[in-house]
Length: 81
Image 1 (cartoon, rainbow, N blue to C red):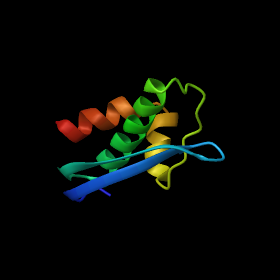
Image 2 (cartoon, helix red, strand yellow; image 1 turned 90 degrees about the horizontal axis):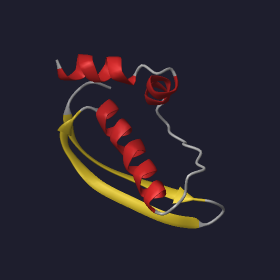
Image 3 (cartoon, rainbow, N blue to C red; image 1 turned 45 degrees about the vertical axis):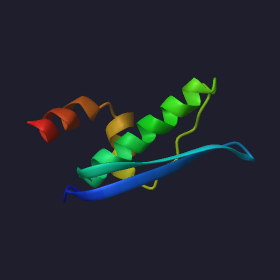
């Protein structure tokens, strides 16, 4: 998960129907950084559309654990130092 390479990304916001989608390019980084970036982009898009009650689904258990166990600041410190 920490082998850097070139990544692009995408995500969707939906209820029973499609609400919005997003995609982009992350460049040369790690999969964990991409997973975190996708979640951030999804929340930002939802918030900007006035959607504040969200459920985040991800296929990355490691990423969700970083967020839910409040380990994100430790990860960011280690990743960038």
